[in-house]
Image (cartoon, rainbow, N blue to C red; front, side, top):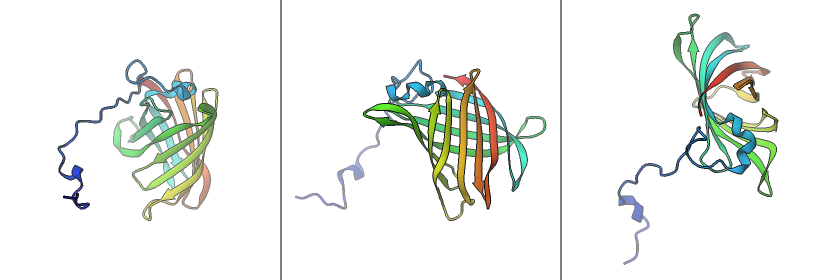
Length: 195
């Protein structure tokens, strides 16, 4: 009896266990760091802090943020960011921006160069491909492509600068959107709370 292509063997298979491979933002536990990520090691961790945001089309705002940068032993970093708006007394008001993505060093003959690629996605329908460069503990990215869903805001470009300064993660982000060219959008200082 031949297999029915409409009834593949996995269709009625039992559920699988949880994901069996470890990912970690703490270098003391989990998989060994891939050698291609050695230069990005200072970024791996769990970070929290505060920032200031704004854009020509919105009022300035204060926010808090948590960024987790982790790895699973392969030559890329997983990046996850979530932020929340703060009031004048630094109390949480509402959730704000979220992003997930990957930072990848460009490899030549299996060795990392100072060039980087970053893929970032938001729940608001914007996906960005950033190309960048590492200089010491500074990372600079600029968009190479932006893809938007039909209902997403009209984001057309971006520029991001990250740095590790006196043990803290600092960054500044510019955005081109809503008919405006690159304009300051976000800047923050986060401290390591894990990893």
